[in-house]
Image (cartoon, rainbow, N blue to C red; front, side, top):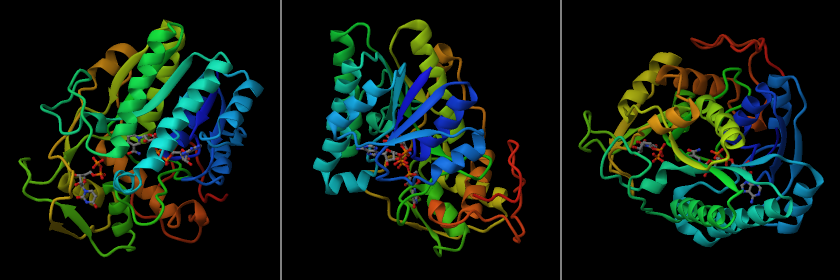
Amino acid sequence: MRILVCGGAGYIGSHTCVALLERGHDVVIGDNFSNSSPKVLARLQRITGVPVACERVDLRNRLALIRLLLRHRFDAVIHFAALKAVGDSCKRPLEYFQNNISGTINLLQAMQAANIHRLVFSSSATVYGDPEAVPVQEGARLQVTNPYGRTKLVVEQLIGDLCHSQPSFHVANLRYFNPVGAHPSGLIGEDPAGIPNNLMPYICRVAAGRSRRLSIFGGDYPTPDGTGVRDYIHVTDLAQAHVDALEYLADNGRSLTVNLGTGRGVSVLELVRAFEDASGRKVPYEIVERRAGDVAQVWADPSLARRLLGWRAQLDVDAMCRDAWRWQFMNPDGYSGRVAGTGRRPARGFAPTNGATSPLRI
Ligand code: NAD
Ligand code: UDP
């Protein structure tokens, strides 16, 4: 299939492009680079051996989108393009509504104009808010606690209405739990702007000596060790699920909504220890007040994705930590720096995998 990957230059999108290309699909990235770097394109080529087509486009520009979709003959769209920082969304909700909701409406209109009927949408476990029970199933009550989460829920709902009105339109809503890790080559990974909000990039930053210590938000949750529990999932497992979902839409002509997680809850302290083992670095921490809006524990019941897509997460927390650290170590300045790898002794567990050779240069 020929796939438009909106937001394909970003963290999850770039890994999904690799998975799509490895399974023989054609890819065109559409991105405005508001939270990514065009440098990812050379890295994708390095990993896959093929140049990846890319068009700079902003989802808020409907005419440009329509032109893009009419210019190519896409079989489907994967839609990653969104603003995603919870705290930021509380400060500027209108920007989030415009980018994530209006941008998606523009995309749907462009798809209609170009007669494209298959969409894979990046949703989030945030639509469950503070779930009544874990593991969370797809039928659980939906509730959101911040504007970012609201954009995900609203977009799921409005796409649902579109599917009702237009039976040939099919969507895969993929509710991600906590994506972490990086491609095993160390060439692509998560490159947050400024100081990271999320746990894994913050741990990487501390291990690299760029922050003194990790603040663990809350040590008195009703969890086995008192710290928050989440379902961390390796980004390459997540990427594979997108290809499976796309192929499901093409083969079955039915929509679906599934959780994408491992089904295993991991506490903050467990993740810190696993990271220390994988990297050979200490991660100093202190336990501080709970972060407003955080819930004690959330993990997925991923059995529906297994049943419908034949997908299940393959990689464990050790692999997530090893790959996250490799990316951090090789790219201390993210995409804005050069790839490290020459003249420095690699930290433990750093043999490049997946056929990538060392030293790596871009
Ligand atoms: P990311 O910011 O790395 O990638 C998003 C990409 O979309 C970026 O390349 C950005 O430049 C682009 N983009 C944003 N607005 C755009 C617009 N108006 N027009 C064109 N391009 C635009 O984020 P990610 O972590 O890869 O997340 C991808 C998707 O998954 C997002 O929709 C996010 O909400 C969702 N999600 C992410 C997580 C997570 O923890 N990373 C969890 C659940 C859901
Ligand atoms: N967390 C933490 N310190 C940090 C960042 C996160 O203790 O600097 C905790 C947070 O309270 C939660 C878990 O790590 O229990 C995962 O947080 P993250 O922001 O990565 O994802 P969330 O599930 O909140 O979207």
